[in-house]
Image (cartoon, rainbow, N blue to C red):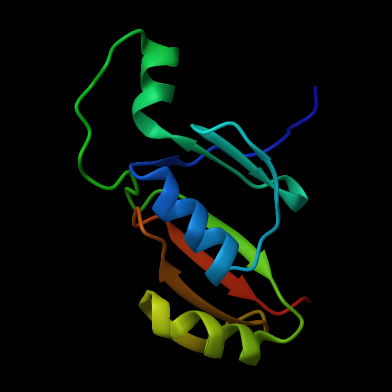
Length: 122
């Protein structure tokens, strides 16, 4: 068995697609409307349609899908430039901090309040 990618649910695909493309600088390689895949295996799925596919129900979902139970982790060798580019567009959890294991990271929320972490390579 091979793990392929996480599929975070999003409430507004256009908003989330623009965020990951324009703020996070990820390149879209597939766009099927309710499913978007970026380079490096990251993908998004429109929450309402995925819930319908998985559970055969059409729920009314108008709130963010992030539930503080998952961190989406990214790395950038120039963490300071990433922070300067991203910070004005997000709700920061914290600015760049050195972790106990020595790595510097910053954390913030995406438009659906999923937790994102950007770290320098170790």
